[in-house]
Image (cartoon, rainbow, N blue to C red; front, side):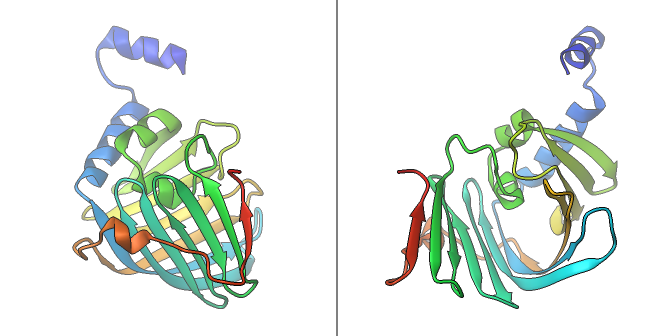
Length: 202
């Protein structure tokens, strides 16, 4: 990494990784918010065996806000603001809260919802073809091994995530809109009465 940076400075031209990072940042900078539906398929490690499916909807407001709601086959909500990430499992009636600051195990949607420095400083980005980018976290304790994004016309249409157990999660997006008038208030969350609370920042 240091050697590559040195060669880049000597030649005066950006490395392939740096060029891909800049290209991805430029495409994402024009998107302030997104919302739509998703379907995801989970595959076993090093196999095409499908071990699970789910569907739901999502919202994203840059920088720092996202909501990921699974509506089938179970009911879960993951919602984040610049301070906390909440996970509400409605079936188990549990709520988990984790701090955003100092947490390197970011979810893929947090990566998309962050500012450009998140991509530039924490991920190695490679172009995989037109509209496709592969992100590999630089931190050893990251929440996933790799993330592949697929964009069409600057709009997010798919993600392929490889987690730390080598499982793959293929996500396809539909009905995606970038002009929904979202505000930070759309990402507020209060634990429901009776839920078991697990706060990891106290």
